Image (cartoon, rainbow, N blue to C red):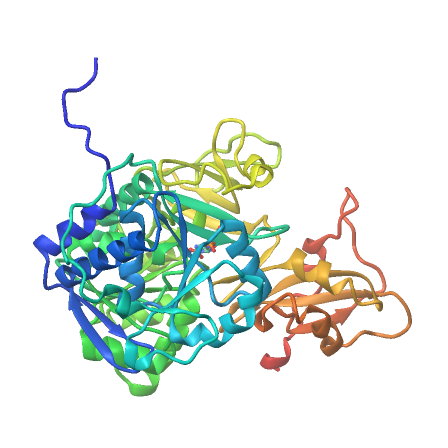
Length: 542
Ligand code: ADP
């Protein structure tokens, strides 16, 4: 027997409606690329999203169309985030830290017809224009700042001007796609995770449920995590739900800029990857003070170093260590301490904060050992982490091969992380099965670097391994077996990578071996190489 309750679709447009009505004055503060500090409430954000949605429809954008963004965190980007899905189109965020080649691949694969960009990226897009012949460009600025450009671009504020500020949003099934975000593949090209209205709504409800108590009432939150990284960890959708104010930092993410913004805007909770917190912590030490209102940090994307967690905690800032992936919307587990753990001695609490925390409601977890069997959740047994839930990707956009590899026969998604799980669901990441290096929160595919480097005639075999790094978390080291007597230099190798990769994806150093160690199946044993070069010191740390 069916329940007798209304079956209203979970649509993201309801978030804006709710915030505009219930929290009209919670603010979106944006440090804009134009140099000023802009403020608007949720009511105005909704009004502007309505205007943008009408403009998009006039430009022919409708159900299922992909609309790309290449932009920093700011109110216009947030408006696009809400306006595009509200009319049934798909908001595709492109990561500007990728190489131009990777960006073009993604835009083509996604089938983007329109691209919104900040002023920052206009020169880059002018260079790429010929590779994106059918793309329509919109520059996210006003008439006064509109640059001369070779993009034949529209001006964002012109699109909004004079339009109605209220409307009834269209209705469609909640399973409709709403967002698209590409993530590095362990092999081959980036893969797209296609979020739905339903998955984003459930994700924001779950996030609000687990983080809400620590965030407090109508908190002021700084998303340092970019809108092009898994929906800024869902904040554009969770914030309107809880009436939060968002303080958008724009492109300035160094410690001093973040310190000043936190202080002047009374930021209480800030979200980002460990590299960002290294910078802010150094600034706090240098100034001998923390930004007054700051009391909560959400950190994820890479493991948070214990010393940094302890540093913040000693200054009265609660560090919430979370785990997630692009494919999990992203929140999978998070480390707010349960009530019975909050009065434990400092060291014990820091032990718990080193873990990736307990699973979030709606995300089931299992670990599979080397022998293919499910391992107990006893905090000791290790295996590859698999997850399942309504906020987890069921596959990759237009990529049946990668989808088939990612999902096991029982419908669970393989994360490529090696973990243990305690009886209370506390997750601890132990290693990574995927061949990726994470630098400053961004991926470097070792396999991509290796394949490209092999184009150098002096390289017979090569392997790229992660070296720990105090600032970037990990940096790539290339191990080379030479093809002849001459040793290809780092500079020469980087020249072969130049057109395909972004500079920060280049190896930091190169070492040479006579023979590559191999595994039983004949693959290069990276485990052996990691062990052999564990004491190697990268050039910038010497
Ligand atoms: P995000 O943009 O949130 O970093 P990605 O999909 O790029 O998401 O990366 C997800 C991967 O990052 C995970 O599979 C894991 O390897 C790593 N990761 C995420 N959070 C943590 C964490 N708290 N500790 C260690 N590694 C993490």
